[in-house]
Image (cartoon, rainbow, N blue to C red):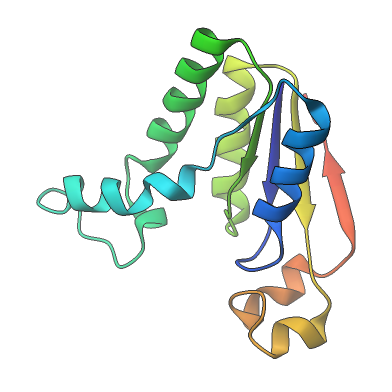
Length: 139
């Protein structure tokens, strides 16, 4: 099983992920964002991007790393990762489902006042992200 926690920066994805890992017991925290700086450094000569999320290789690397972790350790993965673009989110979800059909995508969101104060990333993204918590387990 893969549990993907998506939402704007600073909304609490990693905090929720740590709590889930603790409560689930055998789950692993897989945070692709921790690999972001390394990806940018390695790929800089080939792929210039202001944000490592824009690197062309990111989706494939995220999915392949998840596959290797699951194949090696056979555990549930809890994955906090921001993907604000809906098309990229859908494409990544499709690829993750190819390695584990039991993908649960949770969209975390903060209230507009919190975002307006700069506490959850880009306040311009709040229209898309507003709400409490929504889930998607589309096949």
